[in-house]
Image 1: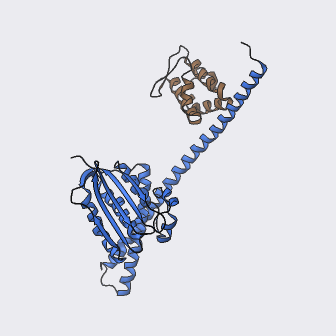
Image 2: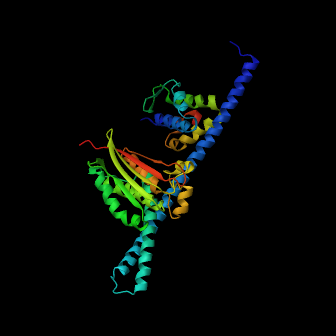
Length: 92
Length: 269
């Protein structure tokens, strides 16, 4: 599983703790993000970073800055292994 | 299509409301996480303390038993009386701690069950034999209607005897100051039904709600048995549930006796 797939999945699961199943239905609206029935996430987009940014923006559009912070906090520990250029803008 | 000012205002209000709800949900989610951590730590501590105390009590139990049985030579009558009483108290302590540990292990899901077919009637008779002296001491009349058949169920005989059959009969004896206890066993619709009815202190509607909950004491029961841990029926329910059965209680209220019923699926062998 690619790192950004894992990051997207982690973000959705963290949002699920706050807003419940809505987190998954909102994620399904993000183009290039494939959510399987078992809740595994795959990014099928030529620009996976952009897909993660769109996911973060999808939650922020509905729930404001607090949701953006939740996304950032959720994946803080996972970003350490990435080169700065590989980190999606929304998570920097 | 251009938005009117009022539509824009409405959208802004809606967004603000959404954000507020989100922040509250976030706070609740964090509190829930903190609570789960605190609960888990508390359970671990309780488990550790119980386990340690059980160790000390077990050593004391062995010591008093050795004195009573004369392992250290002949003892005087007063010492024997004291050691016998102390042994009884220590055994009660071990039993209390075991209840707490069992409940904790059941909750954690760390209890293993051995399932094998056995005759439930024989199990009931074995437990009754062990508890008959307690009923006799209170001059309680025990009526038995166990039928003639064999009541085979597939389950953990030891746990069902100790935590379900013994618990229900023991409670009936404990909470019935005078009168009688009726024990019934029957079969119907693929189910084996075991019930223990007493003419004891009964159960109020309020107490029924917490009867099978963890540490749930009835207001009346605590007056009769101040040492009750409140874990006995909780453990019984967990074990009955694990066997795919049902347990419930019936009572017309305080002072009107009670009836505990357990149903298990009969084994198909």
